[in-house]
Image: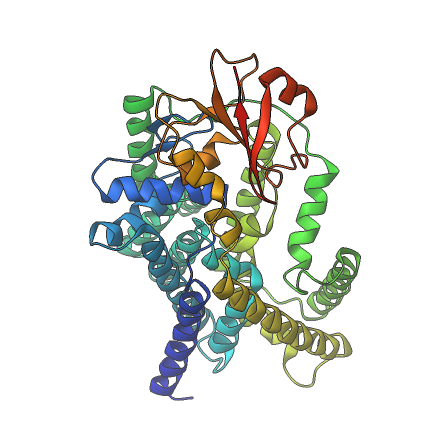
Length: 481
């Protein structure tokens, strides 16, 4: 395939991805609980107010829990005049375009003799529901993935050419990734150790200069973020130390995420796990047969992936038990696996193919078709109605209008004040533990955090609350005194 035609095909696939996001977010990007902070933070940054928003207490203040890069990126088009929703839509579409292009470039670097490998890898990433959903929602993964993959592209260039400029570029990418998602710190730590070990093995008077350069450049964004938090919030972050042992639910989440790489969500969990076990067994058989040496780049990347998974485990065990190996968290590993299969793994499918290879080709082909079909339905569903808090049943709930008309001196309480503050421009308080001193309003969300279908009878009696307006999404109570 000629280079010009190859690059044209890359461009078409990347444009198809960007168009899919643009089409799927025509009514707005999906909004989850994390998205609320990102979007509100971007709006305030774009208007010159800094990275501020409403926390779980419903009170306005500096944001120090969610890293800032995604909000800062969205704030650029906001400052240029776009609405925050349109800005997020634009950023996500461009981010998927970048991810697909970088995927092709990395595969081409790793497999310069493979004509179709970059294109196949691009298509595999494009049709992955995990990746596509990241870009249909206002989630930081949308820019985290191209940053991480570009970082690995420059790591490859550094290993091949030994240029400090490539190392600095890799450090910049991973440094920015760390202030987009904290888990990016794992890549910085792993690469610093690898570079130090390489210098120990090489010897010489200038040992440790390269790893020191890398860690300093990569650490600057995180250092700036920590200093800012100390100045505005008197703490580096708000994640408390809370040791827990990982549970079987975390194991199930990991299996669920991995199985969703092969089969879409509508397929039952047990069937997906069975398919995962079959594919893994076949892959092991092929690996034992071919014994392909991955090379220095994949050795380094494998160590980085292990450090990333370890970072998530530490987060689960000591800081945030609600974190999981979910599809969002595992999406960087998915992209790296696709690149690996398109480069090193392709050798197992050279003719004449062994029986396991033939079966894998059939299974991968069927999986690609099923995942592509499901991704089309995701885009269509997003086009018809954005997900979660961006859906019509939330944005058009009559309760918001009723609360907006309440005088500012009348308190408003909510079972999730963080969510209410996203829809109403006023202070919202958490549920009172004792009867409030005067009248007020309370909003309850039956579908948030597994809450019940209505306010607990004991709480209703305590608060002397009576229902004013009720939908499947929001129940508005009046508190009488």
